[in-house]
Amino acid sequence: MSLITTLARLEAVDTGRAQPLATTNHRHLSPHPLVFVPLTTAGEAGAPLGALVGTDRETPRLLVVPQPRDRDLRFAFLAELADIVLPYIDAYAADVEAAERNETDPETGKRVKVEVELCADAPQLIVPSRSGIDFVRLLGRSMRFRRTAEQDPETPHPAPPRVPLLGRWLTHYGERSRVPGSSLLLALTDVLSRHWATGQSSLEDQHLGALLAWIDPPDGESGAEAALRAELRRDGKGQLLCPPAGPATDPAFDNKLLAPAIERYDRARTALAAAEDGIEADDRLGELTAAERQIRDLVESRTRPTWDAVWRGLDLLRALPEGAHTADRWTRDRWSFTGHRDRVLAGEPPQPRRDDAVTAANKLATREREQARLEAQEALDDPLVMAGRRLAGEAFAGEVTDVVMAYSEGKRPSPRPLVTVRTDDRPHFGERAKVYRSLGGKPQAAEFVEYARHEGDGTSDAHSHPDQSDDPTHALGSLVVLRVVDKMGRGKEPETGSVPEKGDLVCFTLFEHEQRGGAKLPDPEETPWTHGGPPGETDAAAPRLEVQPDAVTEEDVL
Image (cartoon, rainbow, N blue to C red; front, side, top):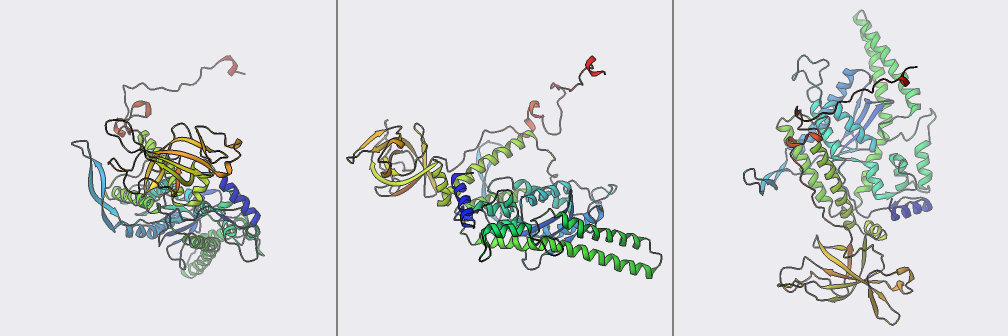
């Protein structure tokens, strides 16, 4: 946790209201997201109880599994979910635009630009909390390998036709959610926690009702009081007025309401199966319908408050202006969505249960690179986020007090102007440290040369490692001398606007704005045996270590 986040949390406790951590929205929000509020049976994460899903705030679709242990009813739930989600995805997959992408020419091995299709937009899935993302991953893993009757007529318990396809899409969305900055699948509690600091713990922030109570408490009530009421207050039947954000349920709801309703449903279904004539069957069918309607009402009573809370949270986020780099990250999401669409259309098999060594290494490298890029872009887009980096000594801002033109040594001297900046920040410089500033959206690099400490007579004493704590004139700020090294054009004189001028306010960072790619990994087919060998193949010539049981000794026998 950064210093500025800690200060914001302390201020939230003091004022009784959540404090902003950002002034812009750093996550893309689709105009028409698909909101998914799942509910599962307690103790059985893979047994869905129901869900509210849809893109219309006023008319969500309610899906219910009256008996979660019944495989056929679970498949019917998944088929109905597929009938809602897949048309939503297909609507975005059909709208494409022309785009250029760098690819390797198989003949020359050089990188060339190729015109390809890119989806003009991508579908966005929003769940209430982080546990909802885990549930989406679980659904994808349990569905994408299911066999349908068309694929294998002899398979036991065949899945409905579109269930495996939905599993592949949910798996892709679950994997994409692990990439920092991605917005294809968002947990609303995580997004709200990124933009506001509350006076409670990060674990308590996963309760959507309590989090919203801190951010937007009712009139005349503090955030702490509203959050406590959202977490604990119950009605006359002992049920929570603000149910958890899903997919978990409250034990009091399970024991007092849900369990008797499911038991009533089981009795009605058994009685209907045992009915001997039509009149008795009609009566039993009426009892079964009533029992099922009761379960539907119970599921809706637990999911509707969370559904309304999700849209309320989206309203709060939409009130913030979008960050400058948010659209760029969404473009990468669009490429990801388009790539998976192409794999599905090409008839490729589902994602494997376990990644091979090269794929796993590429995923890890991508996540590390995107995390560094996200942190840099958020700081560049948001002065409040940049303030946190300045407090941490990772950036500094100030006024340019002097610019001295200098040139590099060599046959063709290049401009290397020395820029002196007065700053009140305390950046953590190393010897010849590189710093960067944004110039026309591109990073311009400079080298740290020296500090210049103020003296009482108005002169300065240049030195490399000042002890600012002993400087009685530190209140005047420190003078930092930098040497600009690029983005000044190819001429002997710098291009206009490429060098700061005296009196300009500038902000330099010690972190890079653009992340470099890592080392090139071998193709999966060329994976060495030390890392599992080529996927799906075994190398008989490679040595294999077989685990043998330990030999029995006297100490093993009593």
